[in-house]
Image 1 (tube, rainbow, N blue to C red):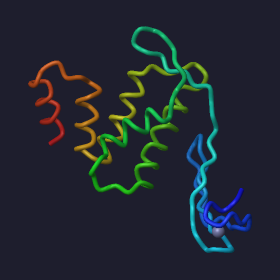
Image 2 (spheres, helix red, strand yellow; image 1 turned 120 degrees about the horizontal axis):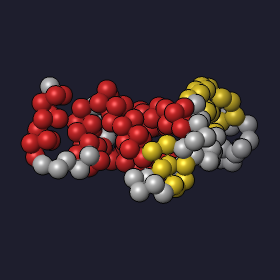
Image 3 (cartoon, rainbow, N blue to C red; image 1 turned 90 degrees about the vertical axis):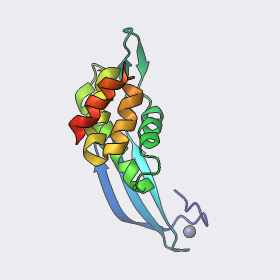
Image 4 (cartoon, protein in one colour; image 1 turned 120 degrees about the vertical axis):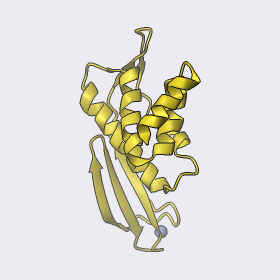
Length: 146
Ligand SMILES: [Zn+2]
């Protein structure tokens, strides 16, 4: 591994965090003192079972985009968003094991997490995900949050 700033290979790890399928390391270059984060991810062949019964490979990028879109302009740093997605991802892995996971279950896990971290993000995600049939249903959901 080389420092992305000066390409030196001398660096130290200042922090390490494990979250299920991922290890995150904060590194500091000993030459230029710049800091950066590296991620080591376990890629499991996790399949997502869609509504129509078809399977597709789990795609972290897709999950990440959906979640961060809901968190847009909310008071979270990039790192905090990362860790929210990490939590969601490790729950998905724990539940799915090698049997695969239903896409609806993933939606529930995301909503459950967002509900706890940010109500606005939750409503945003839920309104897209649940595709509320009518406005009354949406209002009811909002009332339950209060
Ligand atoms: Zn460097």
